[in-house]
Amino acid sequence: TGSLAETPAIQWDKSFRGAPRPVAADYTVAQRWQDYGPEDHAVWRTLFERQSRLLPGRACPAFVEGLEHLPFGAEAIPDFEALSERLERATGWRVVAVPGLVPDAVFFEHLANRRFPAAHWIRRRDELDYLEEPDLFHDIFGHVPMLVNPVFADYLQAYGQGGLRALGRKVLHRLARLYWYTVEFGLVQGDRGLEIYGAGIVSSHSETIFAREDASPNRIAFDLERVMRTRYRIDDFQESYFVVRDFEELLGLAEIDFAPLYDRVAALEDIEPGALLEGDRLLHRGSGRYHAARRRP
Ligand code: HBI
Ligand code: FE
Image (cartoon, rainbow, N blue to C red):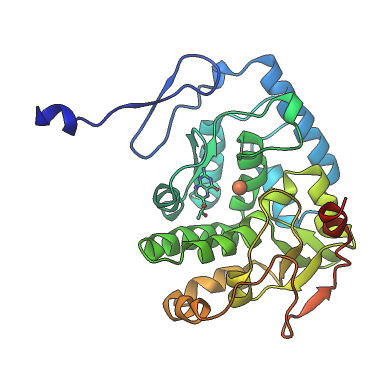
């Protein structure tokens, strides 16, 4: 009968501790803080202590201040509700638990409404440094501190709104490059040199050093059209990083009509991750040594 086919199937997330969790239409699940075991909290502690030791002076002040402002500590995995209450008072953002990567439309809808989707599960101790999918440590430690900053908070919402407008056009990969080279792997010009703010960097011990201090990668002044044309690596350190002057530069992108830009970029060739262009404003010309050695071991 027709009625059975129209009944939406309830989805269940069986990926982590305890009983399967029902997944809502917007892909949210309950965090169920009580279900974390001592080993989960210990993994959080290891990662938290390692990164919070490394980041002062390397991460931008906005990140370090965000970390201090939030009810975060090494002792235990944060409770998303307590975290959301503090974050909401600061910038109106909340954190919602999800099983993992969610469809683009769902992701954009959450961001456009100032909800950050974070994985409820944490990595195992035997995969401390390499992950295929973002886990709770990446999502919470990496992303949430920057959302305490009002300018960055507005930028991420604007990105979500831009994503919703881009749905159905064949341009999402270009918008995803903007996200990748800012929100995930962005650097910012600080008073005392380059500072990191991208969540993929600040949540990674080795990339924190590589992105900021290694001679190998290019460091290029941020340019929207350039970034939209640049392919990226998902399996290793980046070959090029893009540096913004400040977060006002990012938020300023929200004023731009992307429609003519998408058309212009569509007529241009993609740029390989490590390539340099005539017009690039280079802050550091990378030696390329790291990736060259990986290609010819
Ligand atoms: N889902 N949970 C989660 N986290 C992300 O960072 C994410 C996602 N879905 C889609 C997505 N990112 C990107 O592909 C978009 O920025 C295009
Ligand atoms: Fe991320």
